Length: 54
Image (tube, helix red, strand yellow):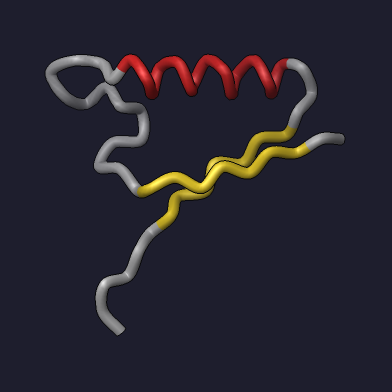
């Protein structure tokens, strides 16, 4: 099985639709990831959290 891992910066709202308008780029990426999963590709979206202090 093929697998894709995507590391993304942490967001306040993971859906991208919590503001006044929908982020069209997040919607596009979500559609692409859904299509990949439908075609048997395992997709992991891993939130990247940067720690600024030790």
